[in-house]
Length: 128
Image (cartoon, helix red, strand yellow):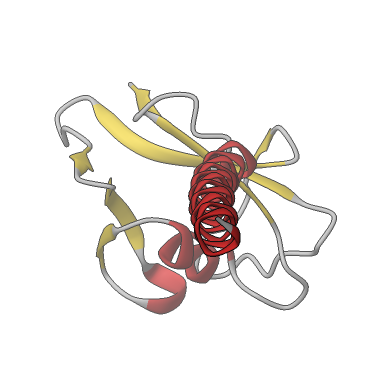
């Protein structure tokens, strides 16, 4: 009888261990999903036509955009003009990707604007 009781106890402990491990893994995956959602919220992507991110001391707005999204430009460096963000290309006949710094239109190109950590940079697909 004692052997059977010990076997039942060991079996019950194994079941409890498996359940605990499963719950831990599920919560870890749920936490990772929330982290990914939070990162997207930090980007402020409210639609495919807008993306927002924080500036970083000494880094250009164009470099940061390239770190946050898949971009296509015409030209390079200071003269780069963003034509597509995350696969959404501006129609050159009536659209362009405009960027704002702290809710104001930028006065220089994205490749020239050296950001600060206090900046909020927003790109919007705009019409003309």
